[in-house]
Image (cartoon, rainbow, N blue to C red; front, side, top):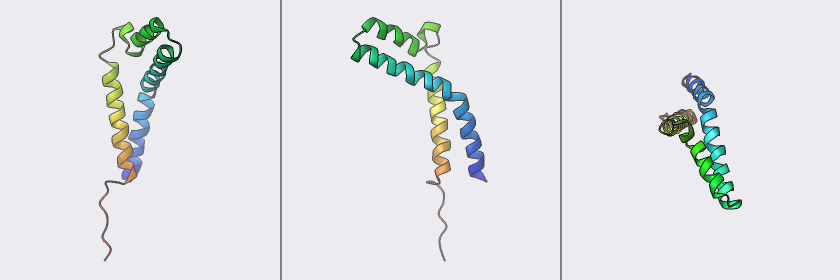
Length: 91
């Protein structure tokens, strides 16, 4: 019963936070490719402003959003595994 509720919350959190997390991952990978492989420092600098949403003046918002989403996913995901459930003693 409890796992069903946790799955519901996990699904809800994942649905809401998938786009910001995917955006962060894709732009972070793009920065690494532009800087390390292509040696395009100007492109990497521009991608960094996009990655942090500094270009939209939201650079203080995205890390908090991603952090809350990841913490929620970790908590609900670990709770569903049963690692922290009390074990029943056999008599």
